[in-house]
Length: 103
Image (tube, rainbow, N blue to C red; front, side, top):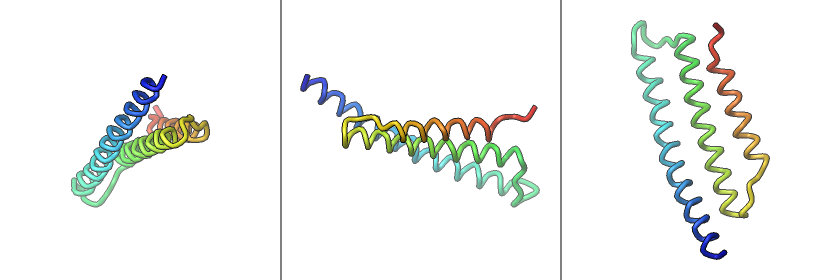
């Protein structure tokens, strides 16, 4: 059982590192999209579609951060905390509502 516990811990740490890379990449993606949209004609104007895209990307980064938090909490206490998972699910639903096309 000790081998499985150690393997589980190594996998959780690897997931935490990979999620960190994804979140950092997501932050750069959000910054890139914002800058590209701001400097396209007519300049310094974001349309409704652009705002939905930016908000969707922003919420994806928040979901990644919450997942990182849940992995950290799991590493600390070896328990999955329901409130953090509920927060991730709630953020995911909010993202779906934000990017939902009204048509």
